[in-house]
Length: 181
Image 1 (cartoon, rainbow, N blue to C red):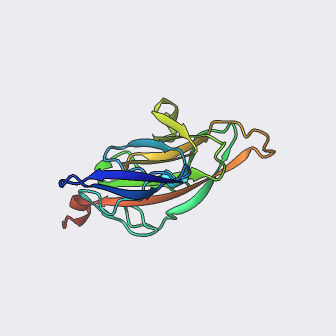
Image 2 (image 1 turned 180 degrees about the vertical axis):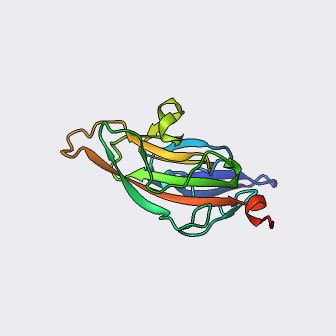
Image 3 (image 1 turned 120 degrees about the vertical axis):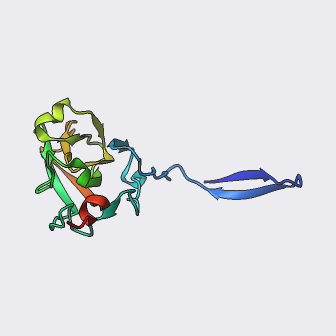
């Protein structure tokens, strides 16, 4: 489908330019500045990870806040009617929250399945703000961790499990980690 955009130049001349837009095109969101949980309508709408995060430096591919190895891309399985699931070996703590930040993008392979997502601790997940959708992204501090729960039935699917795919980017606070004793 081709739409046309018209622009009137200062000289009064009308300039017509074709715009190639289809009903299936999606617009990528921008990565937010605020911590939180965000939902998009499809994996194509997920924002790209930012190249910079003010006050932080990228920890590196497959590295966490503490420079320990961790898989930054993977899959977890969610059970229909199960509890909140965490990413295995996800590093989080209860002190010095400013030392690190995480950003995560997630999605399911089945767009008819809804997942609830939140950022916090597994003990407090039911009290945290959560969002439900088929794909999303979030960011939080070292004192938070991303949690997921299958919230909609599998509608005719014979399995009670669904795969959730994710990509994570860890950031280290430049002041605390670069500070020399």
